[in-house]
Length: 233
Image (cartoon, rainbow, N blue to C red):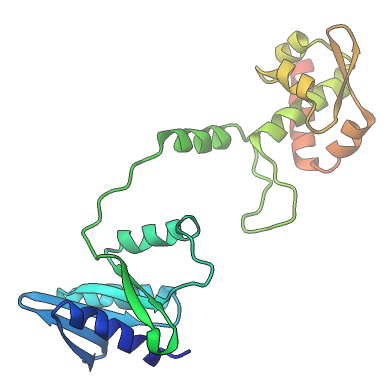
């Protein structure tokens, strides 16, 4: 497949709408003009940062700019929603070309319209801020996969585990008094990581797994242990 194959279907699309179409005009892959309407179309084999940059550059001419690419074989709106959002924010239109030999055709997915600020998801923002505020020291590395991620919840579990490791079996109330999370009881009862065990009614302790797993978080284990030692003084 070549960019040349995209031209004919897109050309027919605009000609059927009454536009005068020209190719390769001053580095523009395609232009379409009708009355006062001036359109530039950039043809590429796939969506890329370079294509977006090229499209934005063409906007300086005052034209409405489309990018035209082959329609993905596994296309679904959900899968491409984020990509569409970026294109709309850049005020670029999108054309999909279905390549089927003599029966190839182009379709406008959306027009290049002025961008309207997207709805701000306050709930999602609060979730992110709560996660940020719930972390004490940063031990994660961005961009990695297949490694343990320390979340605010993990930190709470580590803190509780350090308290139980130092003081022995305690009630959720006493753990909170020693600095444990407000939702200590829920954390102990859920026991997501298998670090805690109920030793008697209303009393919890740390499991051997909990002691072993603490070694996987040396920075946080040291941080909370030092914090507890200072409290003891």
